[in-house]
Length: 311
Length: 241
Image (tube, rainbow over all chains, first blue to last red; front, side, top):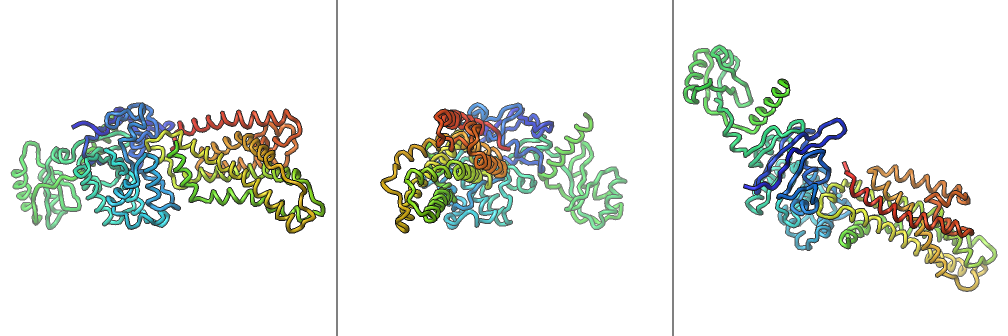
């Protein structure tokens, strides 16, 4: 699979502050790549360097093999972008706003109707954007990013301002894009759930560095297996497990326990039930814990902080 | 470039730029109209056109340029459109050049309106009060050439105002600069050094000394064009954070 977007050693300083630090990421073609990190982690700065809006202090960004620093216009022809600041003219209608961009990039007016249909905005297209809700602006922004059917979409926090139904629609829409249009989607978010439910690939950025990257299903499969326990008395269960040499972790679904090294899941489940019953904790459910992006994220963050402490 | 210009015109068309373009010459015409009605004798056409040109060159032109440049810049600053525009596969210098062309074209249109409205105001006042109707025909061609020189000499001021308005997201620096420049243009209209002051270069087109006209035209027009090109290059290369 070749790379739609590739960065190598991408860095950007603002004065003494290193906003992005030696970031090398690879977004394969025709995937939805979730770029995850907390606010201020360096996501938007990275996206701006990919779009050629700001210059890297070091490193390179390539879009479909085109070096953004050497051929910004060539690279920009490959990309449609939805940025945090929509930049719509409130005194113009949605259709007129799209018309301006279509003229600038040399597209016919029929393209405007096509993208309006895709985001189901045709009915509101002749209203002034000043009267649009944030969700409508977001959809119009997506329509504008899709003008000319670019092979790559770069979307900065695309579900911002959407209501729950709008978020669900947007997720469905983004998930279906690679199959429907052959597009590659790079979307940034600080929300784990959003990335988990939308992306096929993930890159986690922390303090400007990419700390984890890969196909989501593979990353989940690579996680060490854990056993989920639901008991009638978690306090007593924790006591019993600690006495039995386990290290239980409480989460909202119950307790999570890692098997001992070399122990398989079935052996571990049997022993855990024995320990809990012996300790007087009623056992309601035992089973493998579903792997989540949150586990991956926490693992990556923990590994990063231990590296930092060691340094 | 034509596509970028057409986009700029479509944006301006839905702004209040047209109102501004009409308002400034109208105000001069209203002033002339009532000033003429107050008089008892008919002044020569030359004097009426000269007065209109003076008011335009030393006050209304700098104020209009300040307002117009702020308007075209705020069209992008206010909705934070720069990231979107600058991410498009369009050479960035064209985005800024289109704005410069629109501002110069609007100021040219205002100069033409100034001439037409002045003629209209004087004719209307003379019709209402025949005693003040100037005799003969006005030399509109001569005055049009003068207004064209005023516009050419204003290029340096336009370049400075446009760069400031586009460079800073807030309209305050451009407005402060424009108000300051116009203030000194008004209070020191006769100053000899005014020939080197961008906001006074246009009014120097009406000076009696040839060297003042030539110097202000060379600096305002020639140097102004170079500064305008440099401003466009600088704006298209700088990062908008």
